[in-house]
Length: 119
Image (tube, rainbow, N blue to C red; front, top):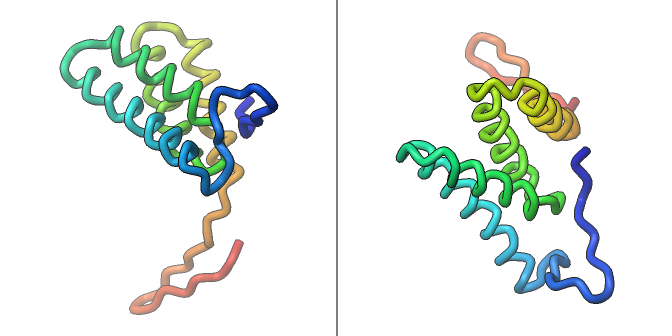
C-alpha cells in the first residue's frame, strides 16, 4: 500500500516540504521514471525495470503521486507483458488506489457550455 514517506532522526534525506533537498528528491523520481521510459523504448527492458523500481522506491511523498503512479503503471505493464500477472495486478491496483484518492472536479458538458461542480 502506498503511504507517504516519513523521515526520522538520522535520515539521509530531508524531504520536508519547501526544503532544498525535497526538490532534488522529487526531480530524481521524475528523472528515473523518464529514464525508464527512454530505456524501454530503446530496447533495454532490464535497465528500464530497475529505473521504474527505483522511481517507485523514492517517490513516496504526497506531492510525488504522479511520478509514483506512472512508474507503477509502467512497471506493471512490463510485468504483464512478461507473464508476471500477479505482480502486474498488484501494481495496477496500487495505481488505482492512488488515483482513487485524488480529488478531480466533476465536469458536466452541455452544448456550448461547461459547468464545473465540485465532487
